[in-house]
Image 1 (cartoon, rainbow, N blue to C red):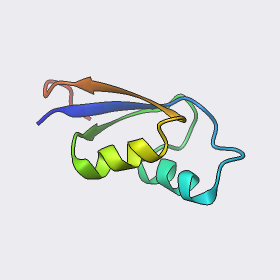
Image 2: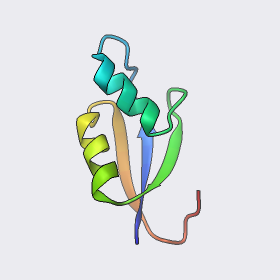
Image 3: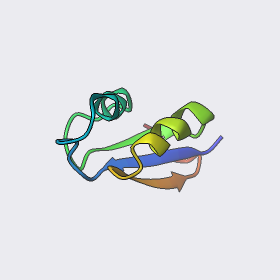
Image 4: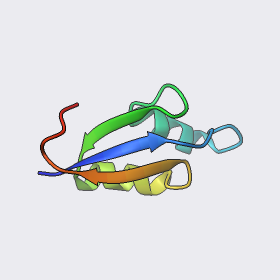
Length: 65
């Protein structure tokens, strides 16, 4: 199964609470932080909701969190 490298690029100030909660649920604490998550429909849906705040790259199985 592949993984997604997700980087938090834009501040969530000024956006609604639902989007702020989604950023927190993805595991972000600071701006420019990067997390690696499994590529599944739940994570894809979360990323889609905040696609204007994050940058996503697909990586192979060789990368471990």
